Amino acid sequence: MQVNYQGELDQLQTKSIELAYQTIEEGKWEKEIEQDGVVFYSKPGSSGWKITRSELYADIDPKKAVDLLKDHTRFQEYNHTAQEINLIKKIDDNTTIQYVLTKPNQILTQQRDIVTVSRASQLPDGTNFLVSKSIELAEMPIKEEYVRAEIFLSFFGFKPLENGQTLVTMVQNFDPKGDAPKDLLNTLANKVVNYNKLFVENLKKASFKE
Image (cartoon, rainbow, N blue to C red; front, side):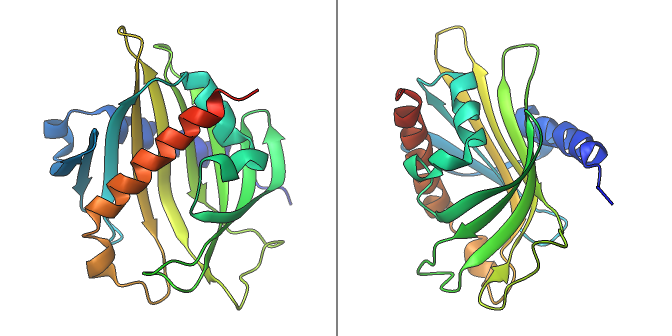
């Protein structure tokens, strides 16, 4: 039986937009670090893993940025943490189900994989965004050699400003599962900032390509 994810995505979209664009005081965000033009905030999540929010300004077209994020064939141009991203199903022009396999790293040596449903959309002010969350899919069972991570919420927002720049806002809440050292990962603000800065720079470069 085909599962309809629209209701889940509606709720996810509403929650994500609220987290991304509420004031720092309203959301009770804690500013952890400001580095290389990136401001990084966090607050406790119900899962025990922090909800993080990164903000930076970039000369990038909002629609082109989200179009790139929707195109699973071009992820290697901007995402250096993923080993592969495969399209499982296209529900409509803006909604897809994807399989993501991460590269091993110094902290999480065992590779993680994730099955996500994503939706791209636009706000009346011209903000383009992509929201994603983990789902369970019978045809994509857990593989012995990987740890199946869980994304509770992922948001990439690109808001056009009057000065011609774009405010890029990224909100993330996920559980890497397995033997991930929670106390350590919850304190790696500088690594997240470095990754997000590089991610947006690479996304900008890719957006200028034909």
